[in-house]
Image (cartoon, rainbow, N blue to C red; front, side, top):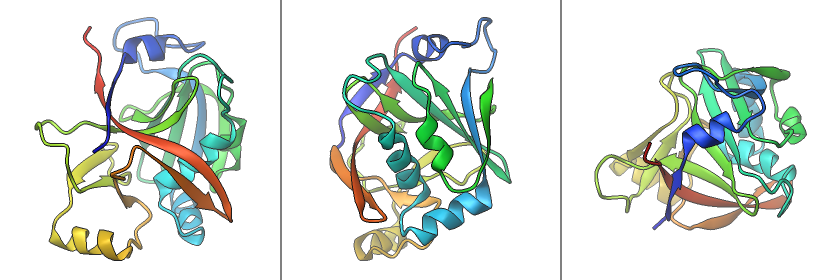
Length: 203
């Protein structure tokens, strides 16, 4: 079972260099925008789901203690684009190497942006919104292709069969790992990524 961590979203987002100053303003930071179709094709070509590919690239730019401050990476999308917004001190040059990149710069997160990756100064975690019910035992499937943002749902019988057989052909859906840490291998190079449910801190 994955651990559950608490994210103080207000602190993490407003701690970025150009975070929101007024209530309701969209988070701002270093943004990276990708063509959705080309990103999905790039993940398929490398035989990994999109979330593993994004985590693998992000891990290339992070080392223990560098940066020491927390970094939150938000994920948002439209019908044609995927956008990552980096809230924190890290300059995500590694994300410029993700397939399908269109542009990078300073800007606001998309309206449906949600936490995807969290760096605590030591570990990079792929984080999943904790389900509303008390059960977090799974198995679960992660969906990064829905226009309302990221989603996690229980695996039905067909999804479970695919999980067990490793037959995921859709790069936008992937199993939620049942281990707290594992290695993602792309092009023969492995990088360690941790996993956790997340819940918002009390305001």
